[in-house]
Each structure stands twice: as structure tokens, then as C-alpha cells.
Length: 187
Image (cartoon, rainbow, N blue to C red; front, top):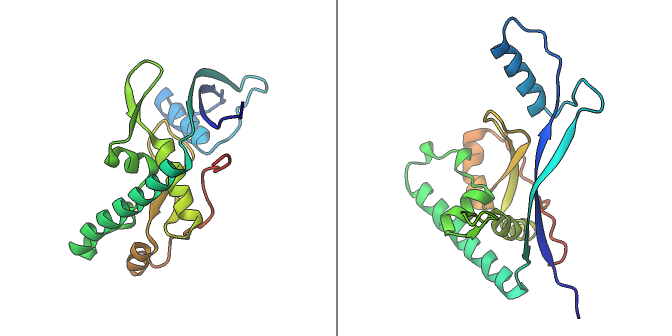
């Protein structure tokens, strides 16, 4: 029996404790949240912990399905960008670049989670976008997460043609990367 390739998502809850001097609890919470978002370690050694909440396992799609996903996403991105650029280019912005989550949602790619609820199949889109990035058909750049309760960076994707059209608007502030952002092992 041959080994199969699986995609395993591990969902965890993380706890970090910070000592904060502030004029009130609201300010202390904002300071601690900002430190956490910046990835700073906690102030009490041994109390940083991460607890596994759930795992989700699914078999990796076959190579034909993956190739179809890549082509579908490339057509989706090109059509989306064409519609944006046919409008007024001065309203187009780098915020028009799209995340894997937005791509999957736009294509209607959903799956059931462990509770039987539908959720967006972000990993499927990320895998295809990663491949397009590797093939230099799509540019990828990172944007800091800015919402409360989030930290890290989110990869955003657009075609090189779209990025070129926007470069004048953003004065070269974006450094696209052709480096895949998602592991493509086992594909």
C-alpha cells in the first residue's frame, strides 16, 4: 500500500502573559495586545503555552485536480483585475490584491469543519496560488495583519501585469516575492 499525502491543519489556542504599566486597564490591554501582535515573548518564563484545540485532516488533491485549480485561479485573478482596471485606475489600489481566503471564497470553495459547519477552503487556494507564484504567473507580497486579535502577515496575490499598472500609484513601495509562501511538499 502506497503512502498518501494529507493536509493536516492544527488549530491551537495560545496564551502569553505580559507585565504592563499603564494608567488604566484598557490602555494596558492595548499595550499587551500590541506586544503580542509584534510577536514578543511573554514576561513570565514558562507561562507561554499553546494548546491544541482541533486538527483537520484531508487527503491532498491529485495532480490533475491541482492543475485545474491553478488554471481556474489564474483565470479568476485575470478577470477580477480586468474588471478593476477597466474602471477608473485612480481608484485601483494595492488593497485590490487578493488573499488565498478571499480567492477561495470568491470561487465558492468550501469544506465542512469538524463541527459540520461550512468554512472557506483557504488551503486549497493557497496551494494553487503558491504554484502560480513559483511559476512567476502571480506576484506575492506580505501585508501586516492590522485587526485587533490578529498578528503576523497575510500573503496577497496579483498578476505581474496588475502589479506593474499599480507601481506608479504606490511609488515602488511593494516588494513582490516569487518565493512560495506555502509548502508544496508532497504535490
